Amino acid sequence: MSAHCCAPTRPAIDPRFRKALWIALIVNAAMFVVELAASFGAGSVSLLADSIDFFGDAANYALTLAVLGLAATIRSRASILKAACMGAFGVFVLARAAWAASTGAVPEPMVMGSVGLLALVANVGVALLLYRHRAGDSNARSAWICSRNDALGNVAVMLAAVGVFGTGSAWPDLAVAAFMAVLAITGAATVLRQARDELREARPLS
Image (cartoon, rainbow, N blue to C red; front, side):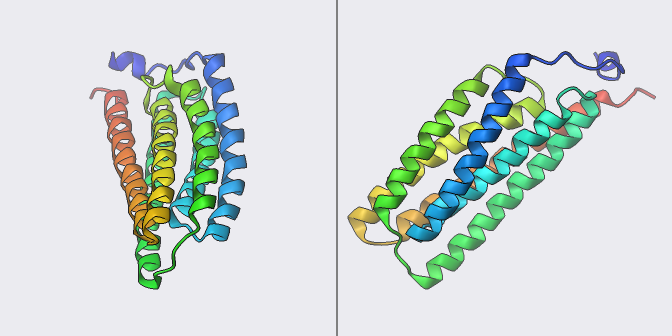
């Protein structure tokens, strides 16, 4: 099995996976712009977190496309880079939520709910496209984990909007932002673990 990992031949590329990645890249880039504007208009940390996540995912899909036909070790190293970006996003969102908690500003729940619904539709579509490829290498799996986390995050944003509307408090928004940060950090750990295992398997026997 290790001999296969070290073989210089390029892997076969599933055209359906490539097409799904291009669609995911375009959808995520568009939603980044929409949610970033909405997050400032609504004053929502969870929307800001989701918009940054859309940007990070667009970059993730672009990197996945760039290394799609390259050697297994290159794809695994790309996965380590993506895992680092996912983890950094999680840490940033936790810090931003802590800052927002100190200000006490209450976000606009109607904007949160409507934009969250739009983002959910976009992310469920992307997740369905990538679902069949979830059992591939760390490069393919990282794309699936991003789409899965996004769909879960959008459901959480909509629940946060309901919570803000019902309580008149910013805490539901901040709690969801923290939840999304934890999703990013745990997803990064999963991808990093698989990528490191792949690199160990690809290492030639001495």
